Amino acid sequence: MQHWQTEHEHAEHHLISFESADIIYQIAIVLCSVCIVLKRPRMFHLAIGLGLTAMVLMLNGFFLWFKL
Image (cartoon, rainbow, N blue to C red; front, side):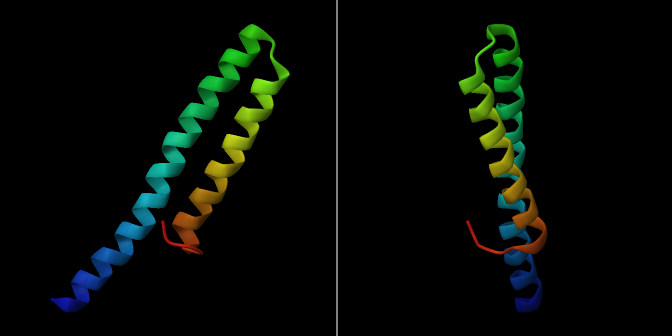
């Protein structure tokens, strides 16, 4: 039972990174849509930065470089 509990805790660390990446990707997509309509380059750069952050979190979900 302790083995499965440690496996479950390990999987939860992966899940937190994936869920965080999912939320940040959605925010970045909405910001990209808004910046297209408003033609704001700063907002586009913010959306790209959020997308890169989400990509790092997604990769962390696979490789677990750091725990959140």
